Image (tube, rainbow, N blue to C red; front, side):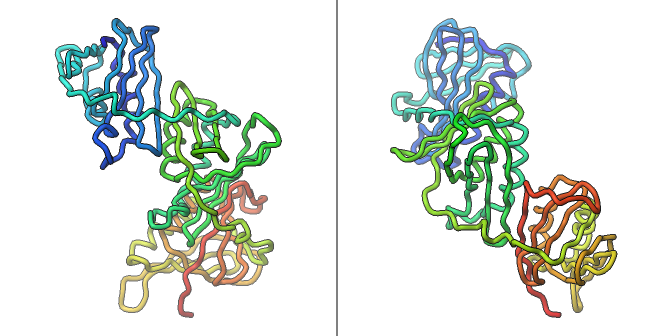
Length: 376
């Protein structure tokens, strides 16, 4: 095997493929990146850990076709550190020699015949805007659980219904929902997929800037897979098994009280007030006519308070939130104003965005946060 490739092209492709490599691979070969040099001038780089696969195709000057397996993380580090000149890669015996200008590296190969076959890309079921996918996944994944003992809640539920995809995530303390349009291959599609939030976030970040993203899905026969493709990059992931809790019903049908506050002002005030909030100590928000007062700390501990302008519709109300969860929701909105909709001081509060103080609430993104009970 012998080929030449541009340094930036190689570094970007190897880094992208190696991002899914396991920190502690169950087998040594799973720490590798498989390189296939095609005589037609295409270089394919692949990684697979039996759950998530990644494959990238880039142009190269291939003098001798071949296939090799080398350490993915090491190759990624080397390729990023090389000078900005063409990179020559040659397989000699059991070593791969990498030359770039006056820099030379020699990497040991691993038995490529022991490397598992990558799963076949499922059938494409539709296309979605990369920018919208990136934004939507970021908004929803903040609510996914980080507790691996609850694998169902570490995922994002994707509901594919006609021309709309709905993403849902919850960790039992908050719930995020985002609806976004897409172009399905069949207008009557009705499918559900539960994807690991970490995997979906990595896909959205890495493929979102490549324009439209093709979505592929295989359910009901054999291994359930979801796949994404854009800009010569392909990735697949096994779907999580299990019945996701019926979380949609948690959103209230009616909210007799709501308040509207400038989002950036509430974020900055929450950050300042939370400086005196010790771990797991809530921030209290007291809404009254024309203002909201934020308080944190009590008793002999450090205390802070700040008042902001707010529009209140309904009776005065006070709630307390985990400051991290509050800031996650506010940061995900992406609108100038936030509407907090209440049913009761101890019931979950719905956060939605709006463009002006007295404008209409936007419901394509909804964030539901459970308040913390506090002594009156």
